[in-house]
Image (tube, rainbow, N blue to C red; front, side):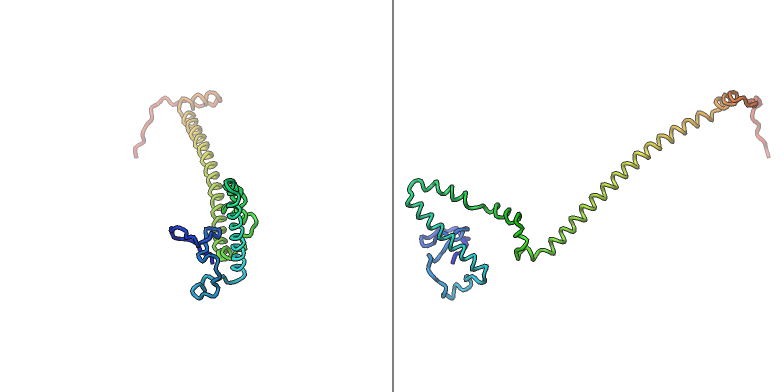
Length: 192
């Protein structure tokens, strides 16, 4: 069975590269009856399919290695073509996202409630941002209106002050021809 290598030891000659950073520690020997390796046996259709894919990849790699040994010095150029054929991990993830197959995976289906909650929070956040922008625009509009009304109020107050001066009142009475005159006697205070 193929196992992922986590240690940093050198690869022993009996280990064969099986692709996806895995190595066959048992050199291709059939160990299906070994009770110590029972936990490593694949179970289910998916595991059998993955095992078949690994076996096909292993056979392909072995044939390429053999072809590289017989090709001689030009075998190094074939590895560049091999890398161009094999899609990278990022491109695999992008293809899963674009095809929509990622949504049908069991791991993703388990987190649907959390994704829906996050989507709900995103919509609430977006709605809150729009509401705050609307309130900000209204505040700015009212601030400008208050500034204009304050200026208008100050203009009217200064005009009123000018109009209520005694000299302006006398001038306005004379202009309108009203028969009133200015009192020449000083003001008297009435005592009780």
